[in-house]
Image (spheres, each protein chain N blue to C red):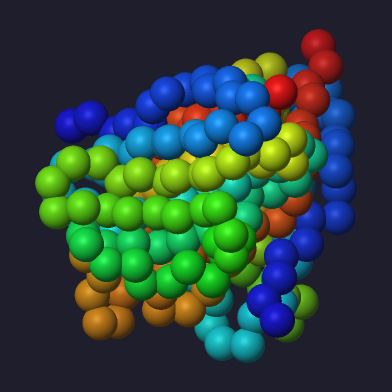
Length: 117
Length: 113
């Protein structure tokens, strides 16, 4: 059973370009979370998605960032007009459907390291 | 607001020595607590988790953690550290039913021979 997959593992962009980060959850998982890790910092929650729905985007910057999790295919985190401050590691995690009284463990991917020149 | 504090940024221990990494949380309800380990350039691997029940939790790789509600702590311990344990360790709390995690800033562990 393959784990959470992210690609690319490393991405270099120049200021003003677009960055697209992809995440394929574990088989059978319908929930996806995106986190950002800045140097010397812990992970910060960005967005939580289920298939075709954004459940919680309270951690997403208001501009330039968007996320989707279509019915078919991977979840995409899109950063438009990147700036140097966007340089970070972006991690995706997935979990199975949440029960009414349970809390589900999140399984993390290897991350995408974005460098903005 | 919910938060997680890991007071130690960097810890160095000798191989074979015992280890304790500190974690304090601030959360209004009964927390879901986690410890993750991250090797350089890698993703996060779950070491152990606390949801309810026994406050002493056993994890992988010989790690354990104890939930102490009175101290709002969830410290990670290992009786004898191996060189392969050198990594960064993150404590996290599950923030409500939506499931997103709040992480501490991490503790980097170095192991000397």
